[in-house]
Image (tube, rainbow, N blue to C red):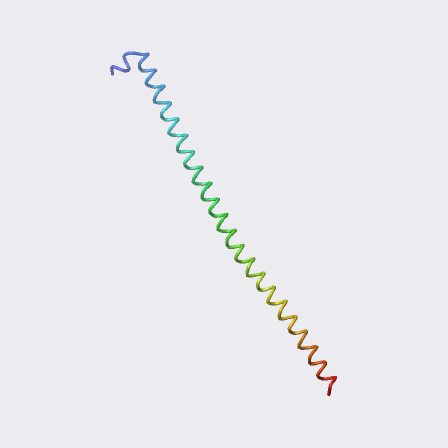
Length: 86
């Protein structure tokens, strides 16, 4: 009641309260934004990690398929030569 009796004091109090609430709001927004950005970065890193694993597996499978195809060609060539030698 004493604060409300002196208009200047009340206005100063209200200004300080408004500044305090504004600061709290900015801090909350910054925290929420930081969390969202951190979560997005973490999800991106996880996706890239798994894509790297998949890419590595695809590369390994491609290399294995190429090696098998080369072996099949060599076998076919050897069979052909063996057939010619008979």
